[in-house]
Amino acid sequence: AELTRPEEAVEVKVATLLSLEEQQQRLRSTITLSPQAEPIQAITLRVPAGWDVTRVLVADNTPLAFAPAIGGEPGDIRVRLAQQLPDGASTTLTVDAESVPAEWLTDWREQTVAFPMITVAGGTFLEGAVAVTAAGDLAVRPAELDGLIPLARREREEAGLSADEGTFAYRVVTADHDARLTVTRRQPQLTARTFTFA
Picture (spheres, rainbow, N blue to C red):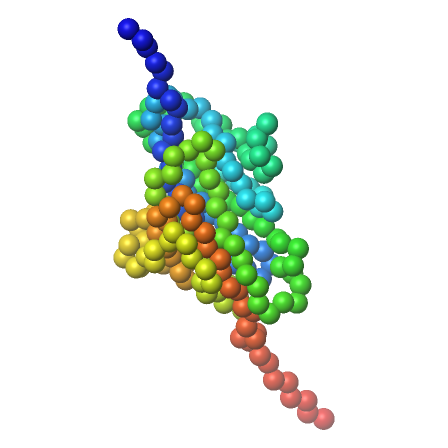
């Protein structure tokens, strides 16, 4: 008889919230991992260019150590799990990242932002969701969407997002999806009038 070792596979579900703020952009990805052939002790996360991961947490908010991945793509980080994750089990990680693009702090009125995604190297994408929100005097609207389906508010929790998370939310239907957003800086909402009396 010929014995073969099953190919390693990790099934991945991802829910990501992009927050656009006056001083920076923030990303929070909730990643559920489930090994299907062999147990895993560590994973490599693919991080978009220009983004810095600030912390990786497990479900009870315990932080995990991470470091640049050796021999990977630029920006890849290696995350070591607290304990080995057996075949068929699952665990959920929360990854926080931030970015300050060079033009973000300049005097702009409108620009296009590509939705960034943190992915698992070698992982098999099952399903996901993305949401975006803007704070302060920023307004956001979708420009180009590919491989995404709008989510109703009641559907957000099923997709891994909280019901009130994000101005827009979408279900990801293909691993090679793409989303581009138009961000506009509105006139400041707070104005003041000064009176001088002599």
